[in-house]
Image 1 (spheres, helix red, strand yellow):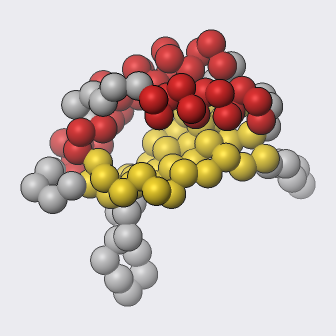
Image 2 (cartoon, one colour; image 1 turned 120 degrees about the vertical axis):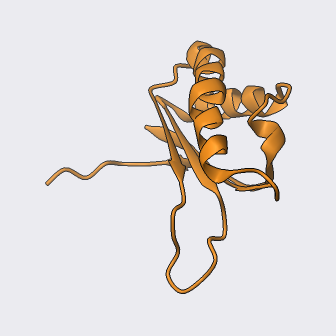
Length: 107
């Protein structure tokens, strides 16, 4: 499996809980629909709630799984090229975008 991972910050002035709900209820279904053609397998959204001894560095992290690297690259490029929605207008600092080839270890 190959995974797209992105971390980002929330712009000042936006409520964290309200923004997370908007992410979950509006943005996530939109992303899932646009990535079906690239074989999306799993999508996880996460809101950072604390960081040891520091202010949290980012607001959230998105993780999207694909079967192979080609689909992950094409899906990621397509997704990032699309127009913003009510959630993506609230975020900033999406410089941390990764595509990771992973192997799950079962024990």
